[in-house]
Amino acid sequence: MSEARVALVTGSSSGIGAAVARLLAADGVRVVVNSARSVDAGRALAAELPGAVYVQADVSDETQATRLVERTIEEFGRLDILVNNAGTTRFIPHDDLAAASPDVWRDLFDVNVMGVWHTITAAVPHLKASGSGCVVNVSSQAGVRPGGSSIPYAVSKAAVNHMTRLLAKTLGPEVRVNAVAPGLIDTPWYDGLDPVAAEGAKSHVAGVVPLRRVGTADDVARAVVDLTTAAYMTGEVLLVDGGGHLLG
Ligand SMILES: NC(=O)c1ccc[n+]([C@@H]2O[C@H](COP(=O)([O-])OP(=O)(O)OC[C@H]3O[C@@H](n4cnc5c(N)ncnc54)[C@H](OP(=O)(O)O)[C@@H]3O)[C@@H](O)[C@H]2O)c1
Image (cartoon, protein in one colour):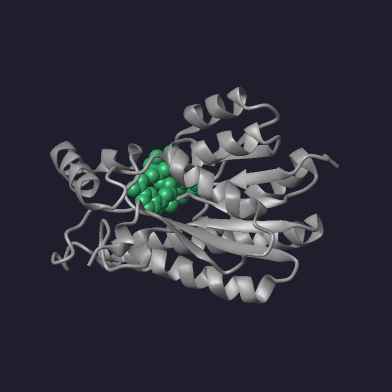
């Protein structure tokens, strides 16, 4: 069994997840890098990080998510940190109710909610065995305040926040469960939006939030990594939004 702590970071081929994987690896943590589709990017990141491996898996699929946790144990013999970062959305104006179809709801919930559930349920025995196991879910400010890329997305992240609190009550004292809720973070996430709209959203946020800039993947990664060592915190949803939640 490896002596170093081991982390599984879902959706870590890009953006926030990649920044989390880098920071954890810099702290000497062995990291499993994961994505569903961007295999080359995931492999390239794992090759860059000391002791990291890449495992392809779609977390919305229970069998693949379970296998992802099993592969982590096969590689490293332990699991101390589970970062549920994989997520997806559709950019749908909130008043376009027809566009937020049942298929969209199901797709977003399968990844953003069930994906979190699948990895946690598979990981719990290993996190308990760790002696200091923890989960950090990457939620969204959209799950706290009524905004975000679409209504199904915002509701999925609100579900993740509530799951975080329920599991923190259930899994203590062995396993801590927290979440970070980012505001607008400049990552490839916005590649799914019309470039003019994406730039408009970024400059709007940078103009109004108290810290007067959009967030970076490193801003969120720092908060995630801090939560992995915050030994007396559980059930917390930590906003990382430049103070955006303070706006009326
Ligand atoms: N950027 C923001 O403004 C913002 C704000 C609030 C919250 N967030 C949250 O932050 C998290 C990361 O987003 P990001 O901004 O870093 O976006 P990103 O750069 O697009 O990264 C998303 C990552 O998730 C992976 N992924 C998507 N579906 C997956 C699945 N079913 N199974 C495994 N991996 C999957 C992607 O890989 P593949 O698709 O290639 O498989 C990619 O590695 C998401 O949960 C998002 O909801 C982002």
